[in-house]
Length: 378
Ligand code: MG
Image (cartoon, rainbow, N blue to C red; front, side, top):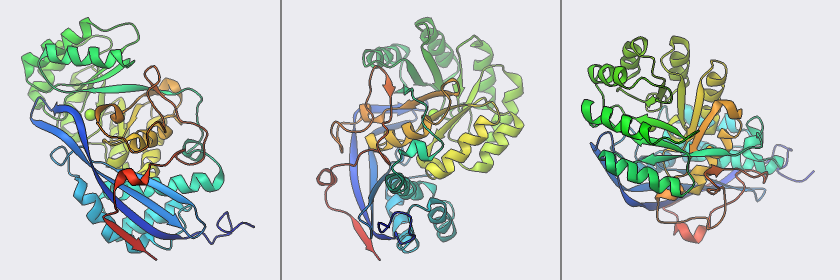
């Protein structure tokens, strides 16, 4: 039997960590202009094994002012986690996950790139794409949702047009400016909606409960859905019975317990599963299953990053039946650098489609990542 392919001897022997800044092609505002981002702090993980198999992962929080996650925290977390990762069989992804959770509770964004790299190796070992390891690919690719920065209504519509020109037929429009401004923006965007085009109005927690009720009662019409209207699940529990507008949750969807509460209490009709936020593909797949068993549709996305992050999301998304799968994101179209030129899932007529290649299906060019910031060895 070939060593490392099912004989129980495969071991993680080296964990290399790379840091790369990803400039955004233009400044990005969210939550009604409360937060501005000009670039992202990305961490890449290369896992090597004693059988020669190599896996790659990446973790890129959406800045440090958005939620409780930040780029340097990924690398600090990896320094703590490395001793329990080395020596593990990466194909036993659940064992690696358990060891990381015992070693460092929480800090999910630091564990996510390790989980991704382990799935990459597990898929290569089995000769299957990650999507097939996670239940099986549906053949059709996934619609890409844009991420439209907060701005004036005219700026928002100009940005939608820019994404339309790139083939996008789905858009996450960042609002949260104020009651009158948001009502005007939603109505103006709805007025230009094309047949089958999808808009999700993303508040990024900016509304108070009072503002949420005022705005949602004014914009009730088919096709309007809002994401993360208020800060917490308690807020959404308060407003949910008072509006018929479909609600998506992403910032408040972090743990499996969050997913269970949202599903059981009917707090939202859409999950925005952000893989880096929830701790990786292993945990994200369980949240997917909660959604599928409760009639909840899904967006699956990275929290930011390169084509690696987009590919990770596209793999999980493509395991969801198409009628329950709302979209992925191509953050690669918002940054100005490349780590795997021409490879991985790319925007084709507004769709991302993963291949049947084993694991992630491609690897970054290591020279584009620079020297590792840390190397941990068995
Ligand atoms: Mg969102």
